Image (cartoon, rainbow, N blue to C red):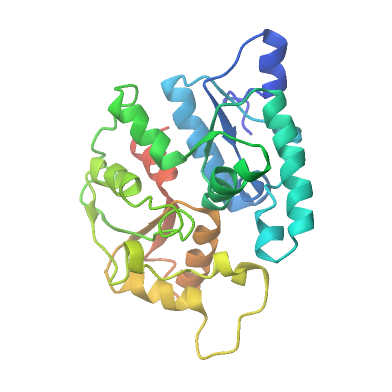
Length: 264
């Protein structure tokens, strides 16, 4: 993380005797994947700009256990989850914000069964909250104004948790032309990451699912595919490359678009 960005840890906050407003759960992709780390930086730039009092767990953050659970390893999931919950409860965490819908879903819906009860927000929900409270003013950007953008609904954000409007509200605020794919919101097609296609060879068939989803996006004639998930970002980026459209279409997280529009 750049020295220009302020990213305090919970341990530092405790040493200072203060409880931050939110805990930013970075997630595995946001911590270790080079592309996803750019999304993390963009969100931190927004937090710094608005002077949100936040903290991260740093080296105390472990994987939520989402991958283990989806793979059927309930024992490993509970080991990872209970370890995280002990740390979160030890810091008396009340609100968590994450840019990863996989972490969002696990922290929000599965940790309560193991004693971890928190108010969990996706970063688009939190940014929208900042706007509604007047803490963040997003100007229509000359950089993005009129740009044709389509939004890919992440499964664990959309169908899994019913969050459809916050990302779209933010995009409209930027003054872009938001165009929907033929399959969107509840009928949105998975990019494959939620089914672990990002980590393995494709299933047998005539076409990879991320390429099929990218074709949905390309049909809209959008020049930017917006996402709200680091895993979707990877799958859609690979799909754009497969269609040899990387010079015409970019894939960006909404936090990156806002940071770009605000020249952060």
